[in-house]
Image (cartoon, rainbow, N blue to C red; front, side, top):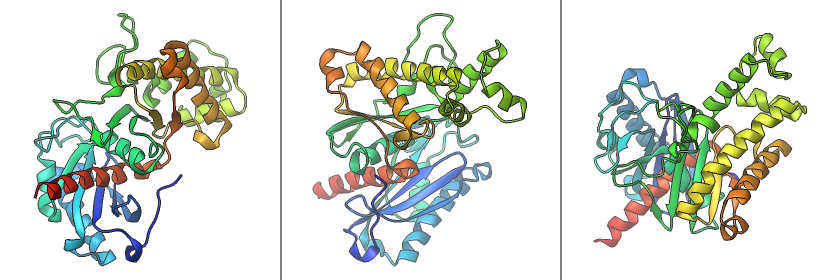
Length: 345
């Protein structure tokens, strides 16, 4: 189900603004007290201009968006900000964000707050997306949920009740870095360590595995397309799999197996009510026969490996909010902080 929309006049007060900062683009959205989107805005992140300029642009965009909607400061509860890690959440600091070169050791929470004029709740971007799906997306029926975002890397988010797991050192729910292969010959994750789930089942890893297989002489229709100048990608892989290429289908099934192994460990650790797969690499998602087959392959691997009661009660779904999950979830986390501050008065 897509994000629910509502007009300003019909919205439930107060309003919350969510910001989803990415390496290429930044999305902002105004969300009402029921998680419905009032308006949204997308702009280039322009990270090369540095963090102070970025914080100013985000703050100014928040103020402009509210002004355009005719929403007064008294109607706004709080702003939420989701960014890539690594970070120190209690301190509001970006530490060493791989997607934001040059933004190291920057007090982003307080600088965005300075420019927008509202208190800011700070979160990991995948954790924000997880809360968005939990609040008004695929997980809205559940009391606990795990989200994996499958893209360049593998992000993670864990929500239990209204608690968004961030960890003692702001490294909670780094689900892409659980170990699925302990051998010295294990694949190297982009983080530099061996055997992590991200090193096997992220979009980056899928392309690396494809390149290795082609170099070793794999028979596949992908070879012709690469020779014609097309770039290897999960989308290209999905297109050939949909045409019935056995190699492409096997590569997607193998990716599903790796995910199933990783998810099983997380299920045995958290025992959530549901698991949601988000991100761009969904092989067509719920609307595609291939996407549904991919999800079934993940489910079958979990059922082979998990405790029977966990496997039998597994809720496994694709994310439903798409690229809106980040700013909706950031706004939702801001809403939690706002309500807690009000209750403390």
